[in-house]
Length: 108
Image (cartoon, rainbow, N blue to C red):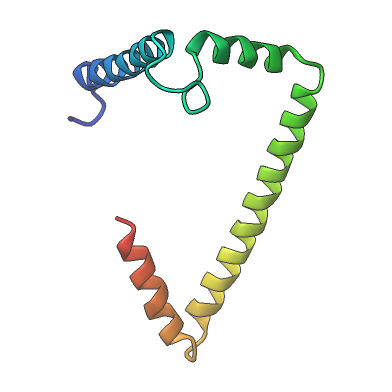
């Protein structure tokens, strides 16, 4: 894909995959091919989801969860920046630098 150009074909394939997956879920649930314990019917899931979103406690709980996520990101960023700074400034931390480089290289 060229830089700055939107790839409509790739997005169409992704959208088609999601649509086929949802249709398959509906078909399997409607015909009871799988136990509802393992794969509940799609309309039941949608109804329950809407009931949860419309409940009075949903947005309060969502706010708490997002706050906890923000705090976790702040803690992880602070720890990561501190360790990175100390490894960069310390000659004795070179073995730790090699371990961190190996971990960084394995994620790509």
